Amino acid sequence: MEKRLLKILVAEDMDMVRGALVALLELEEDLKVVATIDSGEQIAPAARKWRPDVAIIDVGLPELDGLSAAELLHREVPGCRTLILTGLGRPAILRRAMAAHVSGFLLKDSPSEGLARAVRDVAAGRRVVDPQLAMSAWDIGENPLSERETEVLWLASQGAEATEIAAKLHLSAGTVRNYLTTVVLKLNARNRLDAVRIAVEAGWLI
Image (cartoon, one colour):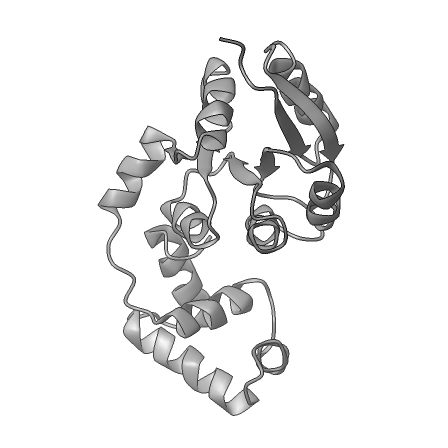
């Protein structure tokens, strides 16, 4: 029985890595790369144009990160499955990926022969998660912060001031400061920077 040809979109900002991914995929008779792009903002427009079955997305894309792009893709082209590639094996990234309706998640140092298999599995509707990352996600402690507190802390970790965070989340600056104070207390941290360090090391922040 002849295999169905699967159309693939590859989103990776490093030229050499992107070329290697395309070369690996095109060794397979049933996989065809229909689009290659190098930024997160290009993913949804390219998917609308080419209608790929699977989008392989690097988590650390410029302009729009890979997980945000995957979430947007899920809304705009729901028929396209997403397979996230990352060099960072942090459980928080996996948790965020699951929330973004990602279909698969692989570490970049996974064996190369696993890529084509993961693409086929994702296209068939199965969820693929790197075993090493899945085990570390089980080991992580429960995040004591609420979703909003985690969001505020993540923005603070990116260097945003309270006024910037307030504008982005449609809150008052005073409310944002209250959230940050609560975060510091909940994590038993010395200050905001220490709270970020604790949350990152625990896997609650990417």
